[in-house]
Length: 453
Ligand SMILES: Cc1cc2nc3c(=O)[nH]c(=O)nc-3n(C[C@H](O)[C@H](O)[C@H](O)COP(=O)(O)OP(=O)(O)OC[C@H]3O[C@@H](n4cnc5c(N)ncnc54)[C@H](O)[C@@H]3O)c2cc1C
Image (cartoon, rainbow, N blue to C red):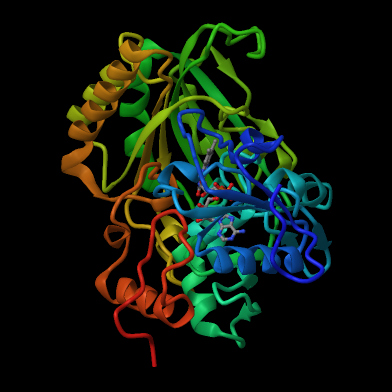
């Protein structure tokens, strides 16, 4: 255990030999093996400031983590202190103002049930296990995005400890440059201590899934794809291929079986949802779970993995899905392939609308988002997963118009996620607030040579 070189310091800081080290450096992807020099476990903003001071004194870089869901896209932690904020999960909800304030490591599961009870929902993604901080700062997309836009656009304030150790509150009126950069530039600007954001009314929700045997994937996709232009923004549908493992934690009805699943969330009544989805129903699903739901149902609709697992993934934003691509995708996702899950998400609508006061990541291009995932258990299956993901990339390449950074789960040159003007502005703000490049978020933004004026 390291003593912080600051008077009256209380923050717990672990060294590799300390109890709790492996738990504190763990991530959601069990293939990650983060090895920082030290790990701080602050309980509040004051302790975050203590940790930042210690890192500065020790000449260490800084990287923050709340849940470890987005760790795979970060560079090495050699020479860095990991600030693990997992103890900072405070939640304050103002139901009347539809406004929420959370600590740095609050997950969507910490707010969604309370919101749902009052007919409200946050703009969360497919899994409530994901942390609000990393999700929001990378963009944040889910079932309500076609109608309500990205979560980054719903953020109203972010508080952080800067690389210099100052506790700063940013919003539209205060440090607006930094507030802009945090909403898209992620964890590159300091250690975030709290986030405030707006949530939306969900007066009526119909949600559920149509399950088809996996050998009908191409037929399902050929029926689904032409329907997309007819769907209103209130309806979001995905086709997800899942090979459910034969393990006891999986519900018996799907255990060990493989399906092409049309998942739907409709901000409206069941009759209208069924009318819009009639061609899918007419295919005769093996199971149909569509029905009236509370907003909390959106947290499990995608059937994402809920516990840490070893995995590799790939993703792409597409401008369409022609029939020849559908056939190749169905082949790769099928029973002979190596992918455990393939999500094909309909996007568009408010994904492409930029609000006036937006940050660095306000919109996402394309009509369809693909996310494929494989679970290697040994060297042989690792090679098969890599081949399957590579084949998927090749097949999608002609339709690919970009990538959504939150789902790019390996280190890349982050300039590819932004137009040049946005990238240069992100680098200028970085130079103004962290010229020594001390803070390393996932998808690194390096400082510009000259700080912003
Ligand atoms: C099962 C699963 C489902 C997902 N579904 C979706 C989805 O539907 N839509 C979507 O948009 N994304 C989705 N994601 C991606 C997710 O949004 C990213 O992985 C995101 O980075 C997770 O944020 P986190 O805070 O939970 O993770 P962490 O690993 O804790 O943080 C990720 C990054 O955020 C930054 N960060 C976190 N905390 C702080 C802090 N206190 N200060 C400064 N920087 C910080 C850092 O750069 C850090 O590297 C999913 C991920 C998983 C694993």
